[in-house]
Image (cartoon, rainbow, N blue to C red; front, top):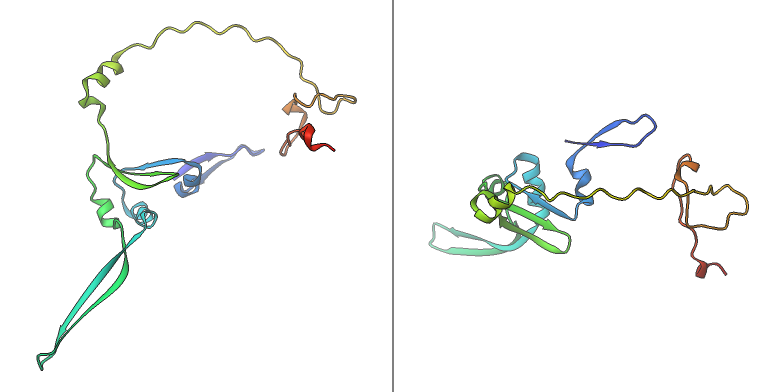
Length: 167
């Protein structure tokens, strides 16, 4: 379960299943999974077409064979549960799902060296220039570019209508 901090008046914590967040992620990486998540991944990976064969023999010596096309899981939940620690499944918004290998940065001297480096010292940012925000409730205010969010209690603030749309 994942916890989602909801910005409600009571500031409640809402516990939601991981599937709730899947549509929010452009790229998803899965390591070896168990139980429900493995079954979910089996469904998400999809099916491929395969033939099942059957053969039967009767006492009289006649033999029959049959083939039927059916959908087979691209990767079964058992195969997902048995993946190596270095295997991952990747889902990216415009690519078909693919299997890849994890990279261990400890096995690469260049990356180990970079990990040990100190970040460069940054200079402080200059002070902010104060600006005055106008209230949308001020009569005669024609500047639609600045809005003070504190002037609105709740709800969605619609952006100003573009000038080309006003006719």
